[in-house]
Length: 334
Image (cartoon, rainbow, N blue to C red):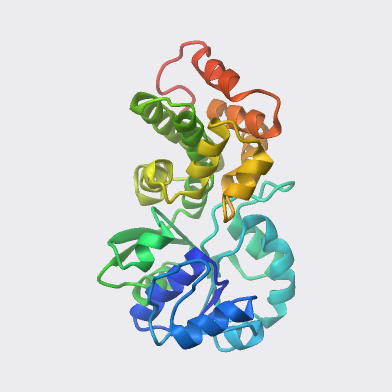
């Protein structure tokens, strides 16, 4: 199996290493020649995964056409909001039989589309040939060969199983699932909830507040998923609560760290500068909220996070807003 991975950020590089460890023929595309050279000659990505030794079989290139030529799988790992423009350039290079795999966890601004929907719309690749990989996937831990698992969701079971085999290693265990909608929603909304957990941590709030936000954040995700046709069981699995816990509790989480900066008094611009890589929840939060409103779904934590990011409420006001909500049954709206 040949796999092209676009691009050479932390998660793209980490998953390319998983594929190479599993025995796949992997070509990793990077825009920056110095990173590509470092991967090819020193077997390290010194910018995004410094100190991690990559498989010697992993090859990198700045040539997208070379990466995509003859690829059985195309794995895309770029910031969600840049997907459409990049795909428009890459689409003519994608071969008819290639399965496109999304590692991205976001909702497109202005359209409210999930990443798999953007892929099918821009490239014309049928939905049956688009897969989603999601779960508690902290890139640094996986690249260090620490135990992890994930979910591969695809409408075509054969394609899902082929990808499962292509990335199965002693330290990385992929499961298959049919629920593309649920896996993508879980991955996108958990970033927003992690921002809220980071806000609480930055304000000095304790474990009860963190547990409250994680649990009620899962409820928000499940309510939206129910409206959009997701399988409710997905949210109790790796792509749901599993990803949520990892992203909300780990210091390696970009979104949690971004929220913590805000809770400590930084502006959005300052927090962006202090967070070296993309925190997807910042831009996707508004799209998720608009999607929820369109379907009549209440998402109070998401609403408060959006208000903080937009500067219409302060961090202190955000906490008060959540606690002032009228009492409801725990399972309302589901």
